[in-house]
Image (cartoon, rainbow, N blue to C red; front, side, top):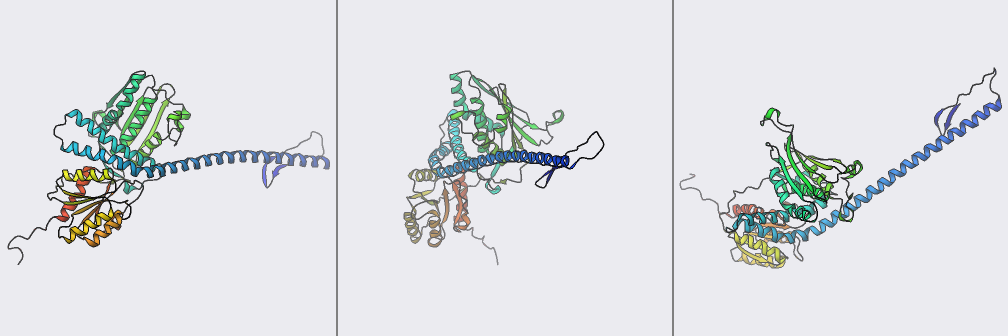
Length: 462
C-alpha cells in the first residue's frame, strides 16, 4: 500500500501473511486507514520541518535587513558629518603642508612628528569616507591608485599607533611590535591611506587582545617565494601578516568576524573594524583571511596582487609642473578658517590673493576686476554656500569674466560632482582638506591657460 498525501508519495506498506488466502475487505480497509494516517503524519512532520526552516530563513533575512539599514544609517550619518570634519581638518593638513615645505629650521624629529600629524588628519578624512562606503559600492573610476611601498606604510602605522600600545604597556604587561620583511617586497598598486587604515585597525585589535602584554609581528613577503633565491622571478602576491599572542578566537567568532556590527568587545567595540579592512582589500582586488586559535593568538593575512587590477583607475599628479606666473586669485568660502588656510597656502606660493566671504561678494569683485581690465586669473570657490553657491558663481564667471578659470572645493564625500557640466571655465575639483600638492597641480593648469602665447619667430611664415 502506497503512503500518499496531498499528491506526494512518501513510501509504501507491504503486508504479508503466513497462511494461504488473500486479505479480506476489513483487513484491506484497515491497511488503507493505517497507510493514510502514516502518510498524513509524514506530511505533517514535513510541514513542521519546512516551517521551521522558513522561520530560520525569515529571522536571518530580518537580521540582514536590519544590518543593512544600520549600515545605511551609518553611511548617511557619515556623509552628513564628513563636510564638517573635512572643514575642521583643512587647517591641520594645509598648515602642515606649508611648514613641511617652507620651514628650514625644523629638526628631523620635528619634521617626523609634523608628517605624522598630517598623515593622521588625512586618515581621519578617509575613515569617515570608509564608513559611508560600507553600504555603497564604489565605482572603479572613483579609485585612484599609485605605487605603494608596503614597508613605509607599516612603519607609519607603527608610529601612528605607538601612543596606544605604549600607554597600554604602562597599565599591564609590555607590548612589543616588530617587523619581519622579506628581502624582495615589490610595490603594489593601491591607496596608501586605505592600506594604512586597514593595518591600523589590525594593530589596535591585536593590542586589545593582549591586556597582559605580548608581542605583535608584522611580516611581509611574496608568493610564490623566489625559487633558490632567484629574486628576478615575478611574484604574484604581496602578503602582509599581522601576528599577535593574544586571546585568539573561537572558530565561531572567526567565522563571524567580518560581519558588520559583530563585536566581542562589548560597549567598547563598534564591530566595524574588520568589515572596513575587508572592504579595503576588496578595493585593492585582494583578500583578507583570519587564522586563529583560542588563547593562542591570531594571524590576520592581507593578500595584495602585484599586478595592477583592471578595477583601478591609475592617476599621477606630476610634481615638476612649475608655475612661472604670479596669479591673481580670488578665494571664496563662507568658512573663515578655510579662507585663511587657502589664502595662506596661495600667498606663500607667491600669488596675489583676495578673499570673499560668499558668492554675492565674489560676483561683485569678479565684475569689478573684469571691468577694470585686470580680471582674476582664477577663482577658488567652495561649492556649498548660501544665497549664491559655487555652481552659480561658476556660471556667472563664465558669462561675466570669460577669461577667468574656476577651481571648486568640496567637503562632501558622498556627492558625485561632474565639474564639466557646471561650466567650461571649471578646471578641476579640490577636495577638502585641501593639500598643497593638489592645489599646485590645478594652478599649473591655470598658469598654462593664463600664460601669453609665444610669438612666432622673426622671419617665420611667408
